[in-house]
Length: 532
Image 1 (cartoon, rainbow, N blue to C red):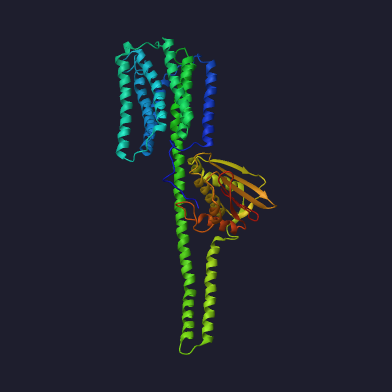
Image 2: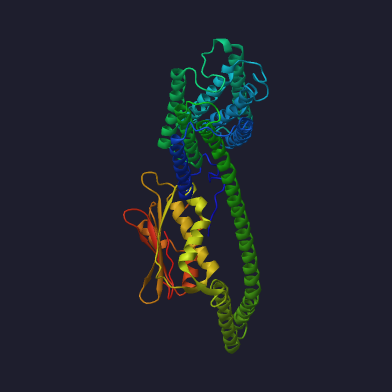
């Protein structure tokens, strides 16, 4: 049976390993951005129609996206208490807030000289500060990843830390706004009124600084990548690099292709993490809901089965046991009375034997509850059943950093069996394999599943793990009822698996995997199932 450990399972993106699909999707997005960047290089200074609404759209999009992202990251920090999440959330809040004075000071957006009335260079330096601050916050967050202390359980400490992060972001934005407005006359000139760079050397130096910060963050994330969040932050770094590279190569005025393209890469960077946070949170919530529902269903089913079994045992055994007691007392009276009546004692003892056989038959009948026979049986595609079961435990596999290798032969025939029972066997065996690899830290955690056909009609499903393996005594006793090698195990899971497989005319066996781990294998007549 599958035992969920929801209290120990990492469910947030800061600790959940990425799936192969997510890795391929992230690589596809980066490749697409690179292709667009290469295409842009050829036409970087081509003039395009002037769209005055582009700047407010850019500002509002960045503000909303980064503000929501910051809220989600602060929420994740309140649960996991990792300082890297706190710094990252503060960075996104900084980006969301700095867009406000940037838009309010942008010449021609609200008023010809900007709503706050500063000079031309205020907007340029706010934009530069924005693009230096974002990768700088990320770089600090990545450097803190390995130095995070054990999370605190105090709710007040989380509230204080989040308040501090918000205060730092707000103070930084307010300080930059005041400096760039009040000290505008002292700031080096970067751009002309039409957006063309005035000081190419200074602009290039600032672009190099931004690229160094973004590239350093990307390199550290690549080295220390562990989670879904790390993966998509690397995509964000790539978008920053392409945005800065486009701005460096673009030397024309506003509303040319290079100008639009650079800011489009920036918008893409704001979307990435937010979309991933929302989509992955929804997926994790769905997995959690399904897991809880499965737990409830299993618990209710076990309770109903136990109640029914207890009532059946009590009802069926009470009468023959009462008869055994009565006939035993009668035989005792006949043998110890004043006059012995051997014939009556013999008859009474014969009834005791008959009632004992009745009790034995009742117990055999209860055991046969595991043998459904033809009831509920259907033709099953073993490969499809294996894939479906692996999909059900995908979250467990990702959480525990386990790679799955499958070798499912197309020549495997369909078999007749109970779908629910065989899937329960797979779930139990896969779950045991995952638990067996929990303590493995010095080698890859690999779950390998194979299907094959031996002899004319025997289907074999073999599941191997790279876990701690079984000792000689454990291998001999592993299928015994109530024997377990786990501190929290009940010792009935593999016993039930063997009963189910035997009810399908097969055999479940365990053997050592070389050099590490365990193999379970079954050879039923017309089907077979194997495990870790």
